[in-house]
Amino acid sequence: MKIVCFYVGSKSELSGKIAKKFLLTNNVLAVTPMATANSFDKVINAVLGITDYLCWGVIIYSGIIWMFGNRTQSIERLIGGSSGYLIIRHAKDIQEFLKGL
Image 1 (cartoon, rainbow, N blue to C red):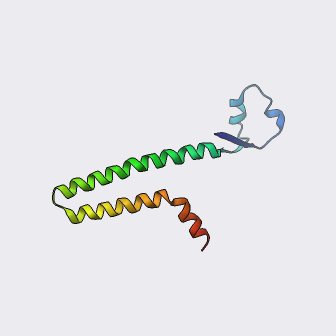
Image 2: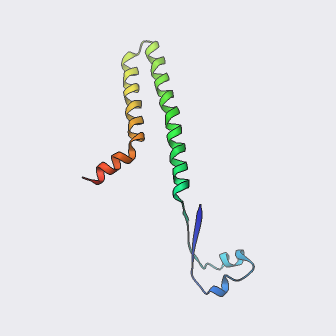
Image 3: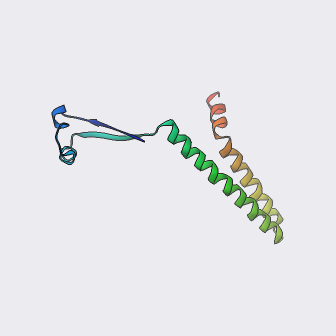
C-alpha cells in the first residue's frame, strides 16, 4: 500500500532530520492511503473465500432446521442464503448492468 502525503510549506522543511517536528508544525494537509490493484484483488479474493464458507454454513444450518421439522423456515433461510451468495459472486456483473441503465 502506498501512502501519499500532500504538504503545505517550503521544501526546506522536508530536508530536516526529524520528521516528527515537521508533522507537528501543521504543514501536512492530507494523508491518503492508495491501494494498488494487486492489494485490492487480494482483499476481494479473501472476501469471496469467506463468502464460500458462510454459504456452506447457511446450507448446513438450513439442513439442521429441516431435520428438526421447521421446513418452511429452512426453505426461507436456504433461499435467502443462496440469493445472497449469488449477489455477492456477481456483484461486478450487477454493477455493470446498473451502469448501462
